Length: 299
Image 1 (tube, helix red, strand yellow):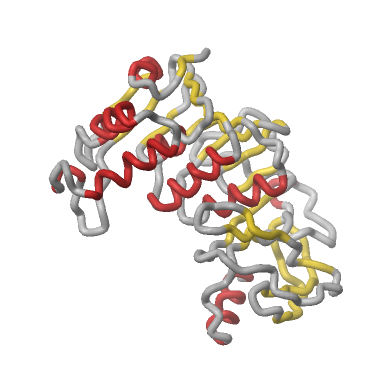
Image 2: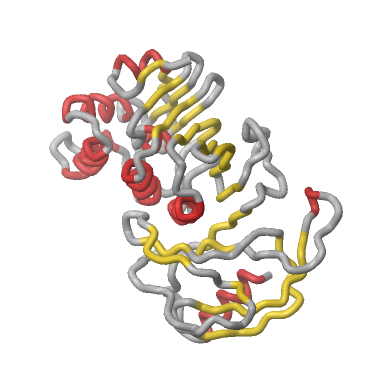
């Protein structure tokens, strides 16, 4: 596998602190006839951007797509972008510095090989797909999937390639595996001036609700669903295990304030989320979200 080869190379060179990359490859050979099994054999020059080291790889079998590095800072801002797979003319210069995290994000500029995810699919054939993000029109992205440590990188790649995006429609968002990544992603959405929307039948749960709150305008259809519950840290402690004046609570309230909520609304919503334990859930309707001052009912 290409990824294993890259990481093995990095380990040998003691270069574990690579820049954040969104990785896929431009096909330069014939593809299989059927879209669901489209592959390309590519011979190209792989340039590691942090050190200018070049390696020749031949006959690599990769899903059809494009390789672009998207360098991001701690807040998810794209820093630099240039092609990794080229015709051998790359000068090997350092592509930039600054990111503190490494990630490899699968990007399919012509749409995913399979657009379905756990029984859910975009409303139409995507123009391009970046992780859980599916570009369905020039200004609208539909989201299906869980937020993890690679999602901010995928979103940065999406914005770099399609800066006209103005709307994030959250279709099926089960939650987050990485709280830091969720808040990084939320700040990036907010900074880009993107609105968030949950359609009829859409479900946004757990940490994904924090992402919904990042929208500069937040709307939800009447039959949209939101599910919240308390957080739990790596030691198994939940919000209720800390006194009300513990600084740990301020982290969440501060994030909500960053997303444009008043102090009162931020504190009220936080109280709602921690009113049930981590293993329990509290379901909120679009009307509930509107009453809390978190969304406008639309559709």
